Length: 215
Image: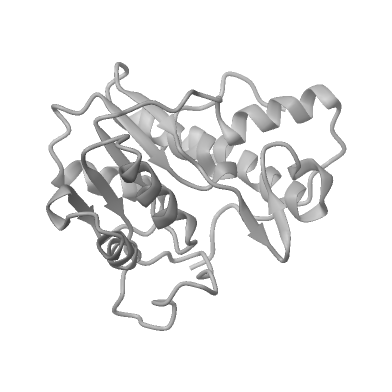
């Protein structure tokens, strides 16, 4: 199954103001890190998913960790992911193995391991976890996907709930895609423009909170 919207799409020529708008939309608002009720780990095979979750827990930013992820139907596994050749391993199980190895108690970890995309990460977690006493989430995700994934959370949780990004930059083909430099490389522009297109598309489908304007 191929993704409806490709992860890398050629970006048209944009003005500086449009670049700023795309940056804010795809990377999300900059928010000060603060303690939350739980750490919500979006699925993925990049080491950043467990490294940031471990760091957050050890910084006492939340007392519990929510891990998501079955097997992605569209993405390629990160080369450092030890479960990339094992079809029985889920992304959640691999992430959890690193969390436990780092000393995080299993009893503070809750997970779902059936999802295959960001929307399912959120919906399946809601199905098995009691969020009634959770009013804030520290969100672990790739930095250039933070805007889309937090908008997905906002769509399916109460308006009063707060979401604080705790994201990490990613490297593709020796190119770092970060908030301050994505526009300086062809691959960065393709990745971020692909994220922009996905936000627009999934917003139209009702999967996430759509932006108020688009280019």
